[in-house]
Amino acid sequence: TTPRRRRRRTLARLCLGAAFCFAAAVVVVPLYLLAREPPKKTKSFRRVVVAPKAIKAAPERPWRPLFASRRLLSVKHGAWILDKADLPKMTRTMTKDTFNDKLVTTIIKELTKAWPPRVVPGFASAFLDTVLNAWRGMPRPAVPSAAKPAKVAFLFLVGSSMATEPLWRVFFSAPGARDRSSIFVHPPRSFRFPPTHFFAPHVVAPDDRFDVKWGSLAMVHAELVLLAYALRDPANQRFVLLSETDVPLWPFDCTYATLTSTPAISFLQTKRSPDRLSLFEFRNGSRPVAADWRKGSQWFVLSRPHATRLANSRALRRWYRAFARKQLGRRKLQNELGDWGRINHVITKPSFVDEHFIQTTLAVAGDETDVLPVSLTFATFGQKNEFTVWGDGGERPFRLESAEWHAVQFGALSLDAMEKLHELCSFDLRATGPGDDDDEVAAARPAREFVGPYRPDRLACALGGGDGSTASPCYLFGRKIHSEAVDFYSQLTAEFFLGKANGTLADAFAAARAAQRADAAAETKRALTGEGHAPPGNYARRHMDAVLSALPDEVLRPLLDRQAVSASSEGMR
Figure 1 (spheres, rainbow, N blue to C red):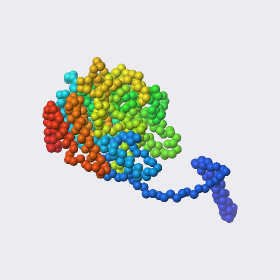
Figure 2: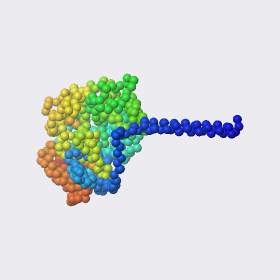
Figure 3: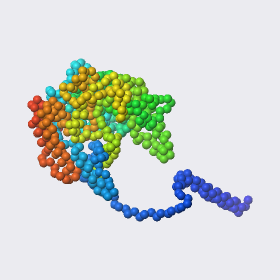
Figure 4: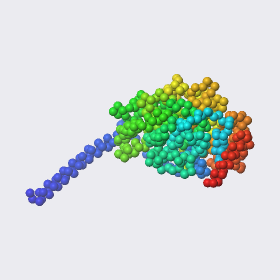
C-alpha cells in the first residue's frame, strides 16, 4: 500500500471512532441522567413558568450575647431541664429578635431559681464531715468486727476531673473505711490527676484505659477493666460502678452495712425490651437472641460471682462484629459513603451497649436468679414536654434540645429533692430476674416499694427482713450533681440530717436558707443580665454565721476543730 492510501485508511478509522463515541454519548448520557434523577411530575396540559421573587437579604443577627454568662455557663457544667409550657411561643406579629429576647429572659429567670448559692470554702466539707462522722445523733449500724472484713470496691468511671472529690473525701474518712473499701478510677487515657488529689493513687494504668465516648462500646471495655482490677483483691466482695457526678447519700457505715447485708444479690436494673436489638446482627446461631435481650441502667452493684463472670467474658468481641456488620450492611452507607466514611460511621455511631451488655450477658448465661432488677443509684430523666437547656458560652449562650435523652442536672437542690433522695423502701429479695414493669403498668411483684420519708428512728441499714417498723434506704448514691453545686449539696445534706433529728434546727436552717437562696438569685440575675442589684456583702458568710449560731455544742465543737485543721492544712500547702 502506498503512503497516501495508508493515511486515508487511518483517517477513516478516526472518523468512524469519533462517530461511534458521539452516538454512545447521545444514548448513554440521557439514560444515566434519567437513572440518577427521575423527572419531576408535571401536568401535561399546562406549563407555567413563574419568575422567582426577589428576596431581600436581611443581616443575620445572633442571639443577645450575655458576656457575663460565659463565666457561668458552659457545656461541661451540665444541662438544665425546663418545661416547654414555661417557654414563650412565637407569634406572627413577633420578630425573631423579640422572640429570642423573650426566650433568653425566660431561661435566665429559671436559672436564677436553679443556680446553686455560693458557700464559704471549706465550711461545707467540714460541716458535712462533722455530721456524718462525729455527730452522735447520726444513726450508725453495728458493724461486726473481723480480722479481714469484706471490702466494697468503688469503681469510678470518669470523663474529666472530679468536682465531687470533697464529698468522697469526707465519705471515705469515716473510721474503718480504709479497711473495708477499695477505690479504682478509670479516667481518659491522657488525663492526669494532680498529685495531691484524693483519687490520684487509685487510677488504673494508662495502658489499660480507653477513651470513652457516650454510648460507645469502649464504655463497656472500661467497666470490664475496672472489674478486672478490683477482682485482684480476694477481699472485694461488692462492686459498685459510679461516675464523676455521683455522690454518696448516706454515711459510709450505713452504705457499707446495706451493701454487705445481702452479699449474694446483685442490684442491676434489667428488663425485657426489644429496644436497639435492631442495631446488631448476630450470626451463626450466636447468642443473644431476642428472648435474652435486656435493657437497663449501667450503674450496677454486683456480687463477686457476677463480677467474675463478666470480667472473664469474651462476648464483647462478638458485639463489636455484630454492630459493625449491621451498620455496614445498610444500603444508605453502601451507596453514599466511601470505605473510610463507612468505617468512621461505625466507630462514631453510639451503640448504647452500656445499657444492654451486662444485663444481656447474665441473661444468656442463665444467671439472673440472683439479680434484683433495681438500681441503687438515683437518677431521673427529662420528659417529652421538657427541654434540656445547654449553655455554650458563646454568642448563642443557650441551646435547647429534647430532654428525653438527658438526666436531670441538680443545681440548687430543694429540701423536697433531699426528701426524695433519702426516701425509705422495703425490698423483696425473692423478686429476682428481669423486671416486669414499664412506664404505664406497675410491676406485678415489685422488688422495691417506697414506704415513706426518712426518719432516724425508722432507718435500717440493711436490705430485707425487718418487722415493718424499719425500712432500708431506697438509694445509696445520687446523680447528677452539678459541679457548681457540690459545696451547696454538702451544706444541705448536713442541714437535712440535723433537721430530721431536731425540729428547732430545721426551722432555723430553713429561714437562713431562704435568705441565702434569695441573695443567690439576685447575684445570678445580675451576672447574666446586668440588671438588678447584687446582694450586699458576702451572703455566703452570712449564711454560715446563721448556721453556726443555731448549732448545739455537740456539733459546734467538732465542727470548729475540723475547720481549724482544714485552715492549717491549706496554709501549709
